[in-house]
Image (cartoon, rainbow, N blue to C red; front, side):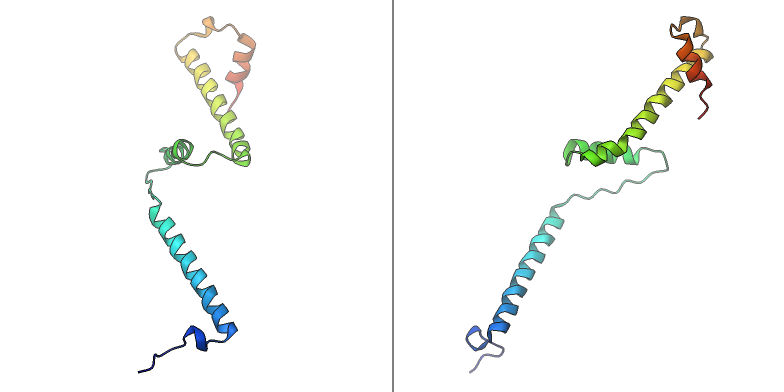
Length: 117
């Protein structure tokens, strides 16, 4: 009874090389599939401005890789904007709650009060 297919002894060098490369490729595919199976995937659903991106960023910061320098630089405008929005809200509420007389930095207060976003 003979065996069907090629055995290594009857293969040409090119066929052996193809078989070796195919085995390497298959092993790499299996490795990648295993890595993909080990990943935890999370689907965040919610309306706009409900905090999905914030949750993702916090999870990345706590459990994932640290931010690259490029990612950090990309966040600078958002950080500045958030700071300004917070200061603007404080100024507006100082006016609403009639606390303007307690403000010590009057000039800066007026500048911020004049900002219209």
